[in-house]
Length: 472
Image (spheres, rainbow, N blue to C red):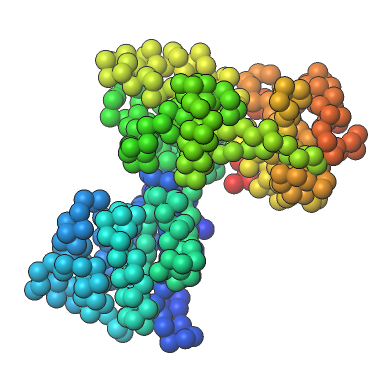
């Protein structure tokens, strides 16, 4: 191993896709394609590099730069000529092709016919934007030649919406590739990588979002405040620069969407308050921005989970790191650049407990949903929260058979993620009152408490940070 952590599921899937490539497949067409998508900087390219290295197969790895079609065609030609493909020197004898149709045909002639190989096209959305004929050329090359060769074609992209669309009905490459979504590293991966106990690993996950680039600069064994003190001393820290680069790539021209995103990042959750905080946007403009943000998976739109329909949608930043960055780091970058990262650190310390209390909720809900042992009530297929317009009540945890309108409520619970404050009898009494106000729940509905500092109340299923970390 070389320090590479996690991604077992993704590596296993890629390895499975190589089986027909190696054996020839049942149809006599051994070629396979996989479309890999994920948020920027989650480690998609690093995952594929690790996979390719482990296979030891002949390969070419091309990354588009997002310039012009001619520039990327020239770069592709150079990469193939430098690759480990047995016939790569063919590319050295020809000028750069003028079209992707010609480039992919030439690539096919350089691939081995008697041994498996791998072709990687990274930053695929750039190629699609540069040349409207690219998708058709790729489909033609795959159908006529690549699928007949023992080759695994790996297509990588960070534009989630575009990568999803590439494999939809009506697009040239429809149903020709397996889809693979690469999420950030999990809280369990963070704990392993940083050698942190469970509770501190969840803190590190909320700050890093599981982004490998940030975790790589986080000293092993260092707690949250030690890392922040280190990172806020350097304007070039991955903690600082990753957020701005993500926003610049996702929203190069949509300044209104970025304004709405910033409003949500600063804690606004309802449609009305978001529009007001974004400078008084009219409802139409706010709706378009929110549709763009949810479509790009930057923002999640949550509904209350119960047996009663509700229209009380609440919005949140879907990526923990981006939420942290928008709340604290982005506004503090000027201070860091002036050498006053200590001021930003003081701001984070002052707001940390309140911010973490809200930010950790979706992470712990997913942790609870992932539990498969006997502690989770049978039939719990969805985990969410419940609230009303007035937040009376507001319930942290609701388990149900389906979402967002359930037939059966399987649990109600509370999250208390504070140091030195266990879940006590007062918290239990409040939870019992709230359960009585939850549509679909009754006095027999099991009660759960997810706590950072223990539980002193009886009559509630208590889960610790260690329990929740094992769910990942």
